Length: 152
Image (tube, rainbow, N blue to C red; front, side):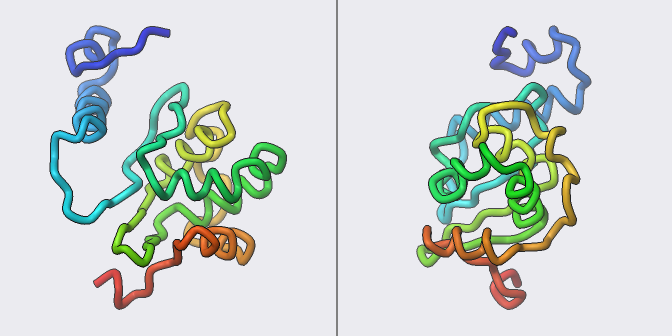
């Protein structure tokens, strides 16, 4: 599979206009073309064929550090993680936030376990449900679910 690094390359490969524009936006975002005062992790997701682990994403690295090995062995934990990430806002004490769409949550799981893509996990469980196991693991890394007041 060829790595397409530009809008023109995605269009030439036959991607739909919306998908090519989204992919180009994603690459621009990843390249750091915008300055962000507080780091927001997450995104829209939906990378066909999967993506590599994003080592620049502190939240993704925290999930991988505390749950990665277990996720590679336990599909039910992957479903719990998808549920805990989808449409749930997370924050840490430094002010960083993380928020994932249904697709982005699936992308992260596939990247952490090292196989598949977002569709393998898309809507695999109830969205917005955080299990005690996932919440406790992320708390070890300094992440917690945002309260309604913090989201406003």
